[in-house]
Length: 58
Image 1 (cartoon, helix red, strand yellow):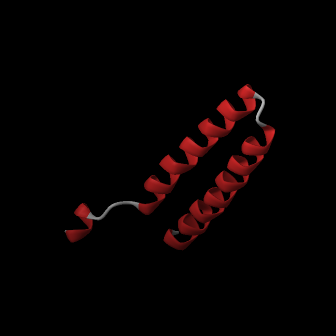
Image 2 (cartoon, rainbow, N blue to C red):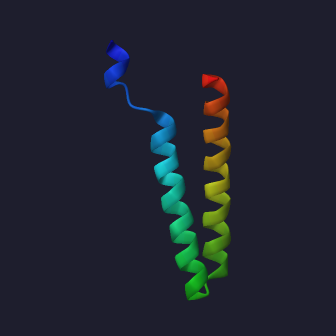
Image 3 (cartoon, rainbow, N blue to C red):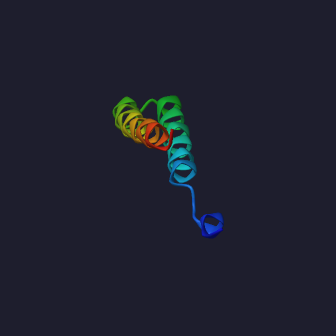
């Protein structure tokens, strides 16, 4: 019953992941490849965290 009000950490990380990917895409369009690479690395790290959380819940 109390789990109803608990926030889902995977959903939060997925939202941040999507934002990082969008920022990376915009940086690539502007030609800033260094920023693109940094944001892509950050998004990959977030994706690994999401996968770990999904495995723990399974």
